[in-house]
Length: 244
Image (tube, rainbow, N blue to C red):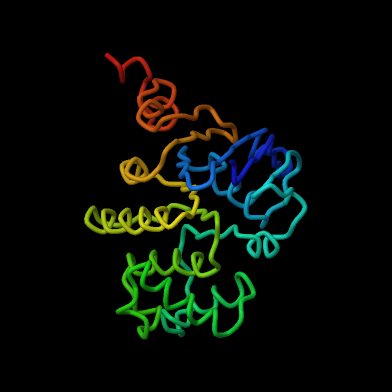
């Protein structure tokens, strides 16, 4: 059963067609990776799914309900949560307090339930030892983990991750991938935009490629990455030369 079915999504800003009739579906419990060059429209696609930007055309069904006209807050309450490419925690608050905000406002839970969820998420995200550390004092990896933890605090069914591995060292990437796989094992469906392709390959079932706002390929990750078209468009490698 699909947890998400986005059909024919389009978004234009003036003369610029940012998203052009893109369709995506995701089965419950699955993980989908999205790759593409900078400026391809990937984050805008996330904005359309999360509800922070309204689609010009197309529809979005989430968990069997048409959410196309719903606000971002309403979608969050229903179970869609997202992280952002650049972490912006409340730097003067502790890690725990940051996560508690996500738990309290993401699903509108009671104070007791929010506190319990915040503690649970700190454990999942590997931040329990940093619970009382000010967010402004965290390392980059820890801020990335906190960004994901704040999204997870709302107890989502669908988690949207936007380039969460960017800027991390290889060991840090390995640690983060293990955490994301743990989140997925808990039953959360994932759509992950990422330039660090080897991290995606360790998590996702399928990869979709976006270029100039259009979906140009989708399928089994290694098959997609072996495509001459993807090599030429995404990696800037001549498609023929890549397979000589």
